[in-house]
Length: 73
Image (cartoon, rainbow, N blue to C red; front, side):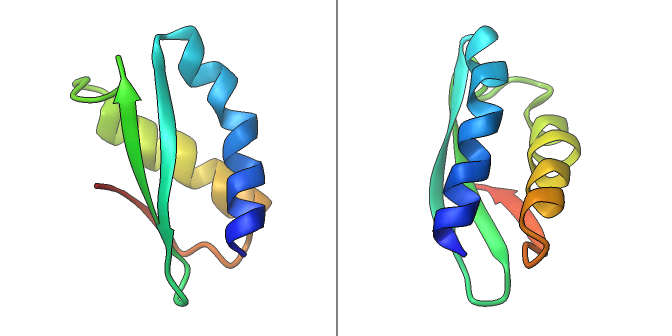
């Protein structure tokens, strides 16, 4: 599952990079919780929670149905 999550994140990266940010995959647990770290302009952005939940989490769940949640660390 980790490889599929990483591949899906590669599809998200160009959008984040347009705004000067990026996302790093930290961990994928056996129960489908994906931990990511936002970097660059995304780190500490007031919209970072929305980016993780409404953007990254929604996309990852559509690409990898085993994903149950995405959390920023």
